[in-house]
Length: 357
Ligand code: KG4
Ligand code: ZN
Image 1 (tube, rainbow, N blue to C red):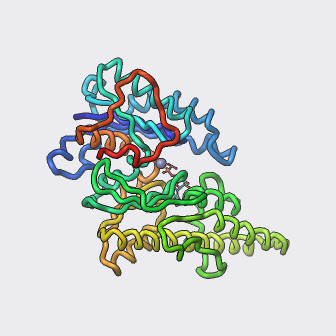
Image 2: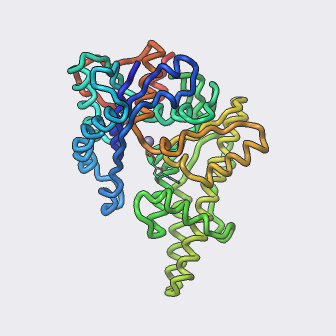
Image 3: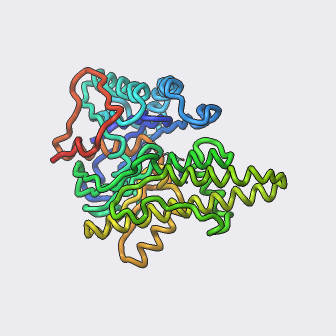
């Protein structure tokens, strides 16, 4: 079965074609990726310091068809070769989701194909199965994106249990807001992580929120405020020497990244212990963070669990993960395929409510 995937939930337009045959034959899942096209709107939104929903929707409209053409020509397939259309039905920006939903459903109807609405986070959760070392079920997923921070127990396709989540900012949001405080461009996650590589450890004593809360929930807004307080304190000193300013920024970036990584790693380990799982999966945009990956790898070696990552290019939003998640849902029979003609989207959507059993 060949599934077309369409992702338009936020600021990336992603289109991909996925062939389920390798998966069905027990071969590595990444062999099923036939073609893909991705356009990031980051440059367009940068001047505004964040995503402008209306601009995002309009750009998805411009990009989605050329990206479909690109995916088709890359794979050597024609529209007639497609067996099903998967699209991100939610959660995300309503206007942006509507573009993908309208496009996917119209195409499916025109080609007389089934369409399936995919939960964006399910796409992220399952994307490590497309990596070189795929995890076995059950596993714990640490889902860290611009909009979500969750720990999930994944017992199978469509079998998700929320163990803990953020009470306020998402991890990616904390990265982006802190990066802004340090004068970095939106979205600052990757930039602050790069800056932190040069910073000295332990210069600032930043909070590690909810580290000892006893549960698996997170909170990051206090950490961001602590960074803001350090920035204000530094500004009061009216230092003009550029190298001193740069040193301040790199050291603060380092303390921030260390704090957030400590909390994410500690709670992930706690989730593994609590569920007796031996496999941890890192998913979502913040999963591209090398400090987090290195810290998890170290802990995994020490404490005998395995960590699995999606390929780096599939950490942030993309069409492949939507095609893949849609395909696995369809193979799982109870596919929840959306047969109505309505462009129904779910800007707010609890993943567990979409469980298969
Ligand atoms: O999953 P994603 O592409 O979009 C959402 O569904 O939100 O995640 C985007 C988030 C942004 O907040 C971005 O700053 C963050 O992932 N991000 C990173 C890195 N690369 C992307 N955060 C930390 N380190 C990185 N290397
Ligand atoms: Zn995402």
